[in-house]
Image (cartoon, rainbow, N blue to C red; front, side, top):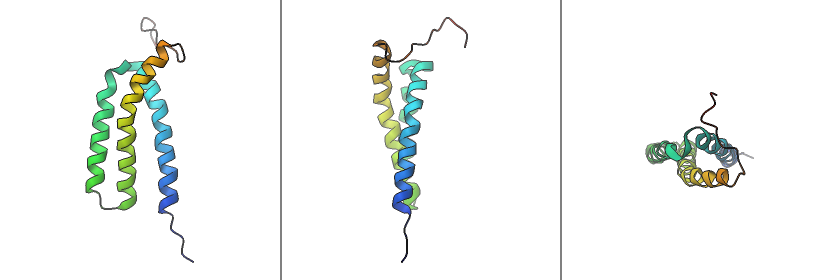
Length: 98
């Protein structure tokens, strides 16, 4: 019996990538506000474009997941701003030195 690990590796890596974007969005909004949306946009477009030219299936898939997560992060960044306004997350005091 031969085992194929591509699916389980893809699933675990996807879980980790999505999990990484949660704190990236929170910290991005905290330190930069929604001004950093373009970083997520560029990162997403580059990753998706790279996924189209990479031949290795696993790497191409993970680049596409990274790109999609980056683009999804743009919307979450603006949603995070609303969460901060509602008091669900702390607002950065820009007068204090960090």
